[in-house]
Figure 1 (tube, helix red, strand yellow):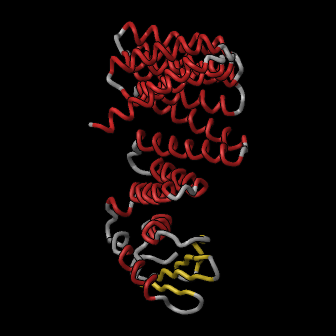
Figure 2 (spheres, rainbow, N blue to C red):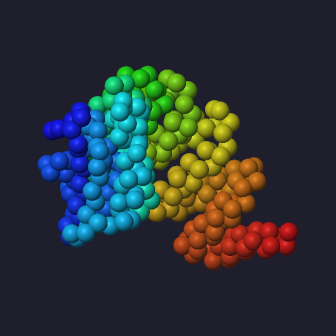
Figure 3 (cartoon, rainbow, N blue to C red):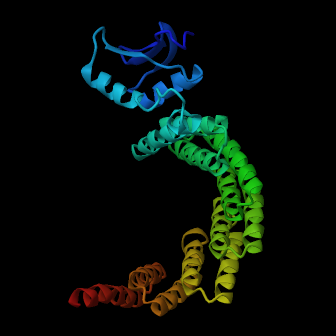
Length: 340
């Protein structure tokens, strides 16, 4: 590849739906979507030892497109410096890929999002001073998109790929001593195992997360783990174990006087009794506890919701008059709020 005092020409040629990149007539890259030209040009330049580009030619269907040419010329200014600075390094590419990934994520284009976060992480790895938290975050975001894609397509291969990424993220966070993220990573690995119906393995990771959360006094992490343990037991149809996990969360919440978490986990227990084991009387008992907690918190929205649930439960038991009483009480909350 020519460089130094020679004239170097970068050509971007659009043929059909593809964009093809050439330097001095030699093919460099091709993409089937309209690329972020600064990113693509930067990639071509650093791959050629930061070659100095003297001329830019943009073609579209055999003729120059002024809009593409102007866009490319504007962005080329960032990456054609004599002595490459931050904007022409791997970290520039990493950030460029990241920006595109965020845009793709908004559009729910999971395949493209995964691809771009992967590239962002790879570019960061190649930089002179890799930012490990950056790499971990990029891979974590890619893994989340893989999980979403797995849910949409019901393809387990995406879950398995996500699992591999979470393991790498976990290793990075453990190296950094980022304990809160370690808790999150272990939970996410557990979720991935849950998604492929490996419930026992999921529980093992959740318990590791719980131990770490307890070690660092991460209350939010502790409640999140109990929630996931119960959820996984529900998926495994181990309803008594699910209730036991939720009750442990209630006990912990009570020990630190966290009424809101007590309310939320009482609701979860009630829901298991209501919808899974069909023990309606027990469901009512825990919905009543949740109502009391909502009252203490001044949380009228949840209180109203629980009252409706209690009414529905009594209706299932054939106690229509009692059901009507609770429904009316719930309706009264809306009327009272409307009068304010």
